[in-house]
Length: 178
Image (tube, rainbow, N blue to C red; front, side, top):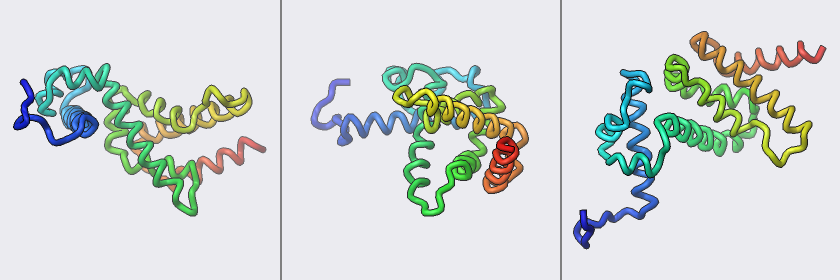
């Protein structure tokens, strides 16, 4: 469509892009409540979101990329709020985050997409190239270990509260150091 003064969106390019990303993400998550990810087509996502295929591919390489970006956004938003708390406990805060989004986490686990959660954990608290070897190895140990706990928690239906999970984690760390 040729844009004229009457058809140009009042939103900035960034605003329009954010709008498209949010609608694609919402559409995919809605469709995933009824279908497995591999059964959902890009065409279905775009129709549900009310956007064109070009908009999808301008923003995402794949359906998994939509989910990964969503998980990263959730984690980034959580982090900005979590570190402001005076009684901040990293492990309990991470369990809190996943508990808050348990429906999404369990849905991803059931669809064989739990590895996307691992990627978000690695991005948040995993090793970074600029770290020394010992720090990188330690953060890898922490992030993969924490992911193992979280994945098992998903499998078991997230029965424990985040506080209980953090207490179990602490008890396990104490047992490992004996």
